[in-house]
Image 1 (cartoon, rainbow, N blue to C red):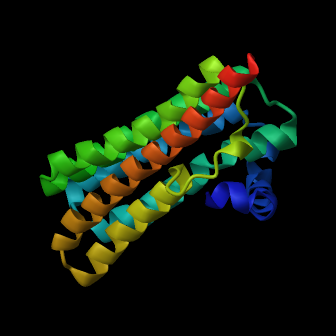
Image 2: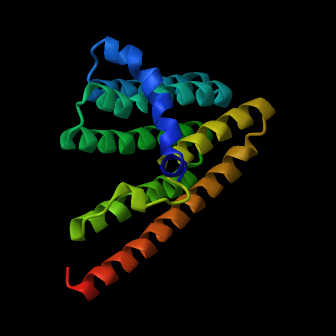
Length: 203
């Protein structure tokens, strides 16, 4: 939702941050791959130090770097369908890695599964609709999309680390999972309306 509503303001910021990567001649796919490596590194480090504050801060940096692939693509004129597909697949693996690391350290496996399944169904709801009818990304301004999920996870970790209240991870992951599934249902309802309209018009 944030990304869709504030795209005109966010994109120039990402592009300004991406210029050093453009000067280094990195391709969008290389930035995407490096983003995944960063997520893997900071998540592996979390398994060792188990400090949610450090993980939240380093995760925010890693996710910020990962977000630069789209900006590099625009600046270098290298947009491609393969690149979009690769980025989407890497995004899903990143969420799996992060939620698995949190579950490993906290023991909250059931809540991590609730969160991950909600995030995946949210993604699938739009992807499956696109098989039936053409869809535009701008037509899906949903409440708890990937950017919101990233911000929420990083804030949850940082606040838990600052306050020292580990019980916050339980309630935070529960709320996270419920919001993911609420967004999945929001997308499903929108998809049903779009498909119903397509059926009526005979498209």
